[in-house]
Image 1: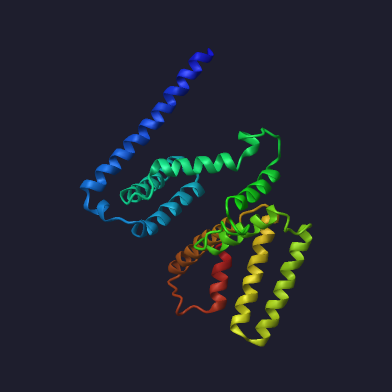
Image 2: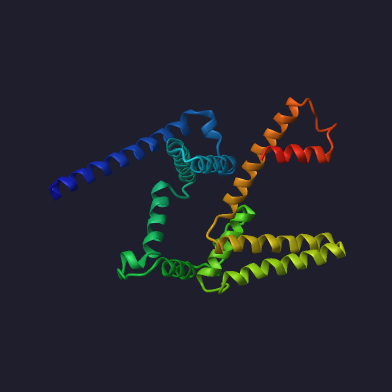
Length: 265
């Protein structure tokens, strides 16, 4: 294919994408004028719906369902446009400001691509990313960690961010030793019986386990969800077996339940 043909195809593809976005923007304009439900929405009312859509996307990704991923991304894109439309009605910002903001941020945080064209590895990119964020006005490396992030994900973000600036264990054996150390401290507080201290030490154990997962290059949230699904599947098999035996939980001993549990592995 000749270069001129490549340029024309690229231009046509770009125009198609822009056309689709433009159509969605026009639909949002119409909905805000003519639909009672859409007219009533605010940042606050959309917030839980955005969280729900995000988790639906996560489910689609976990299920490796490409078609569903496409649909759920569309739902999230709608939310981005919805928030921008609401903001524009109060002259705060519009969708072009949103796009400009992320464009400027990406260019600023990728000087190795858009500025000096230097060759650096992924680790250096991450280190530079945190340093550049501080230049943008963040007072701390951890300023960008959302307060409302789920606890496991927040711990992962915290650990990754501080590791990017060199605050890191040198060996995985050190991380493993830290887990044992935290468990010992937890056991000591359990003996003392102070509930708040037990909670503190239990949290430290979880934080250390999450850090260990990071060193193993596995996602602790994904691992826990796999265990949740595995437990649910196995428990439903246990219920099925008990039903076949005409048993109920009320009239079944713990030892019998353990036997059923072990039989449905």
